[in-house]
Length: 551
Image 1 (tube, rainbow, N blue to C red):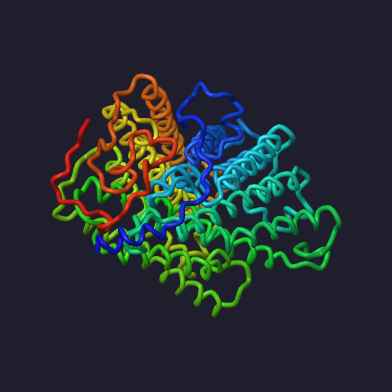
Image 2 (image 1 turned 90 degrees about the vertical axis):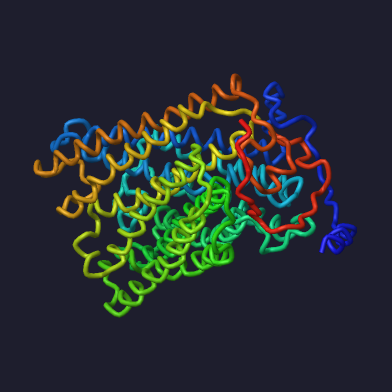
């Protein structure tokens, strides 16, 4: 086998690679060298900084309206202002944090390293995607200072097309423009994975992180144009009065919901699939064990990407669709839970009889499994027509969504940052502080959102700035938990920055991990990633159980 691989490398094409002039961590480099870089590692850091800023902005909106919900009366925010705050929270967090977080940062940084490439297939297109993201984000920031928008992040018609007098056009323009960043990133990753794998790195030797990003890229390319066209049509209707969605103009508001959710449910998997890829890497590394059911996890990622496109109707059980359509969508919703369950069971199997090491990334990974299991399990409630009707538009939906997105995606994002931070910077963070932060985030999250399951079950509607006094105690718990959660999120900001200047050198492979990025690259990687194109001769996750932590 090794002889065939060595023979194959003679035909491996060397692409016309424009190497960076300086090491990507040369912070003293000029601003121009950063703003016009084509190094995938620097672009990942640009995304990391930008996404962190938007996470802070979205978190501030959440903190303010959680403060409002401490009391039943609307004594902090008026109704219109409250509507703007939860809308901006949703728009910023979904379009500018959750969707790009793992693919744009960890994906950009790691995909070339994991497949033995020197960069992504289209470096300049990669930089363009960041600029498009910044343009869309800038419009969102301008939106916050020019009156905001009060339609909710779903932009439902006819509210968004006729009745809202706020900056709907600016909001949909920001989301529309940012969508092109997502499409270009997905296209770049697909071509990179197809065409730039190292010799010997066959499809079933790929890390599951790569499989997850491949499936995500398929959704980005196929789904994002649909929501982009839908948002464009809202602008057309508002500017020229063309009757597309507004019933007053002869349009169909249900058509908007179909188009919006055809993208927005697969978008959930744009957010969560890359995080699942992170968990697979961390589970195998810190269990010192091969991934149990590698092929099943790989195929489950593709299964989620495919089935996710045909379940959008479970968001519309009370929108007037027929009972028979509802039954079909309810069945498909139960079906899409199967690939996700496969991952949870297989990760558990990976830990079984493994030599589990309790480092910070592993704590986040275990937290992800627990929170995502709760989020996915409660999703089955909402996928059932009989239960969805009374629970629709209550705080039960809010809690379910956050258990999947924050409990799942954000935990996985932090898991990945803590796992690959030594590779990205060459420095170790203080692990005691990191462990404390992971525990505080887990406790604060449950303290914030579990009471909202009870609020929804009791009938408290979401998106109301005032509520019945009987709901106050649970809302106090939720706001107190949000305070703890916010503290937990701030702790890593300080020790990550501290580690860059004062952290202990990490070495090339501090975790004793397997994979090209750990075994063939320095920490941080060289400007060219690899001294020479590596040759892959073994399967992924070839752990022996004897690997040790070197820091």
